[in-house]
Image: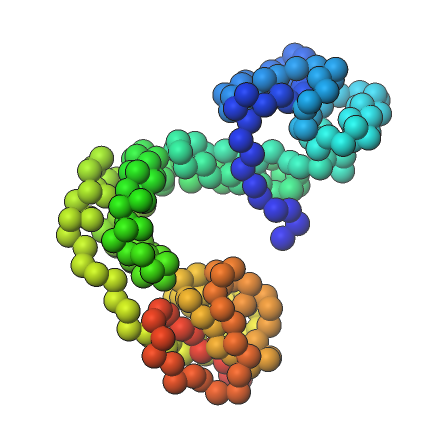
Amino acid sequence: MHSLPIFVRLIGKTVILIGDGEIASPKRRLLERAGAVVCNDECADARLAFVAMLGGETEAIALRLKARGLLVNVVDRPDLCDFTMPAILDRDPVLIAVGTGGASAGLAKTLRQRLDHIMPPSLGVLAAALGKARAAMRVRWPDSGDFRRTIDTALSEGGALDPMYDHAPDAVDVWLAQVGEAQRSGQLVHIRLTSEDPDMLTLRDARLLGSADALWHKGDVPDGILDRARADATRHIVDAPPSTSAAGLHLWLEIVS
């Protein structure tokens, strides 16, 4: 992973934009849409800057801004960028960003366009409803593990709140009225890895890694595969599968020839 994707809140924040014309105008529109206050390089309180211009002075301007401690994006100059701008799919409050680290804006745009065709229009409505119901769900499932497993089940493929389906505005309320208590029993699933290449994981294995609460494995399982798991999943290097009855989904990973 070459960059850490983050979402920066810009409402009311000052952002420097240097440039004009057809190169700078899209950046200005995007920044204003995000609520930023766009200014020139004289603004002392800015922390982000965009250089949207071509010419020999571009690098000097970027270096001057960096010397002031700003994070800088330079159009068509990934070598000068502290951060790059992804292609954005907006289903407010859901934002899906596709980036290539500056390698190909065209590829990022194409991927965003394809995702736009498959993401339902109601995705933002579903997200907003989940946010509104979050406090009530925390009361109902005070244990964080129960809470996460219940939500994961609802949002899974074919689940009651599968985000790839178009849901009615009251879908979350209907689901809350119908859903039972989260299961507390533990589950141990064996994954037999036939390759050390993480790209050779089956769809099932990748889905399990993304949902597991704990990973159990010998020391020969490569980090590239372990990194496909949730960041907060606990990891245990052991010689044999556990006999655990703890709540949640546990995976035993082993390399087989």
